[in-house]
Length: 154
Image 1 (cartoon, helix red, strand yellow):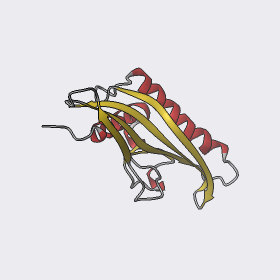
Image 2 (cartoon, one colour):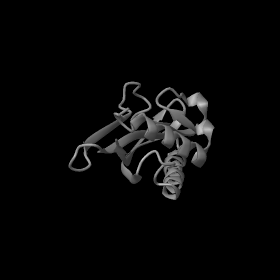
Image 3 (cartoon, one colour):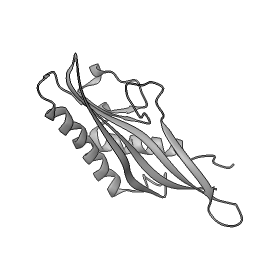
Image 4 (cartoon, rainbow, N blue to C red):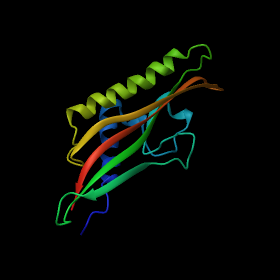
């Protein structure tokens, strides 16, 4: 049977990698976590934790070579790291926390760039966008980032 996409395998592998890096209590499969779940966590497969309809992943495919028996797929899995503090005057703590989460994730990916064989390799963190804001829970930081992978489909 032909595999239509490696997106599900990539997301599953990233959840496992992130869980290893930062712990199961801090990793969410898609949207759904609330600020009562802790004060720092990562959404995997969710571009914006505040938008329950935000994109989860995207991919592009092309034939690997002449003969059209295998396809190469470039996958982008959208993630969002979140942190906050009860202190309205302390923006540094949540900002440092989201970049700390990203550092742990990046270090873990670098030890196994194939994500346990789910992809050929992770080419890296393609982009990141930091948002800082205040709400009832204090100072907040949200770091949206994209993990870009390359896979081979047959």
